Length: 72
Image 1: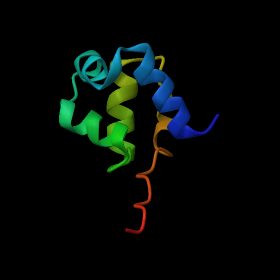
Image 2: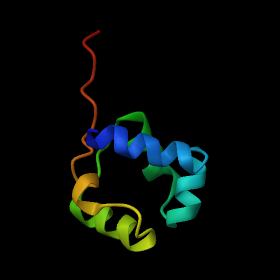
Image 3: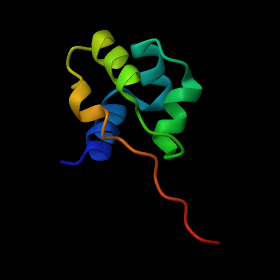
């Protein structure tokens, strides 16, 4: 399973971006940006997420990268 799929599965289990934001105590805008692919997860954010939920693996989360923009 790749890192983005790992993240998407976690989001599905917690009822979407709003549920993840509440569960991890991280602003919704940050979680929404990760979910829609406009941002990735950096090392510090991954560590914060893993501290909030021990079931998350920070070493996998850091590989969630922003999605490439499609050419218009």
